[in-house]
Image (tube, rainbow, N blue to C red; front, side, top):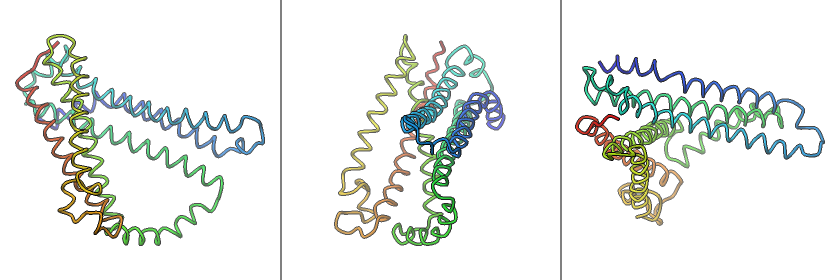
Length: 280
């Protein structure tokens, strides 16, 4: 049944984030064409100001698209479970776990896809800008890549592919954590008899403060960013010898703590949906 729920959630979900990402792709294409044109080489008064404005609006477009997808994730979850739509959703022969997981998986995928589109957009424009300065940029980059990978391995203590895998795991868990913070806040907001949306905002702020405090304790209770668990990995001011001795354990600690935080938020979300459902 989870597969069917995921399928239907995907069908109802995909249109808005797809439109947002298509808009970002169009902005990127326009930016690439603009950067590749000789217009910016003209010795005209105000060209630097115009370039600055173009960069500013591009950054605003990226931020707006990212925020729009995040807001849509929250709105979709709230409307589909806690408003009139919820009468249908919550009368389906499915469990609260299946409902939450189907929405969580869909939201994670689309949030990650949006992040990938944003990253590719930035990389594309950066490459275009660098290529306009040096047409041999890509050849030089590929020539220096083996040396970079070797230095990376020596400094980090692991290969770039393993580091990339850790980064992907951390990104997926961070995305799930961000979404579950919204889900849990919306669920806890239903405890308010009135102004439930405002209550959800208050709960979200409360969650943010609590997790920031915990992160601060974990991150700063030892000499470097390995946190209080860092000593288990041998991190201290006196015995680190390379960058990887700090970064890799810090990433592992971040992965573990994010996983724990996400599990707590998921439990709250499922528990509230199962035992404290209060439709508008």
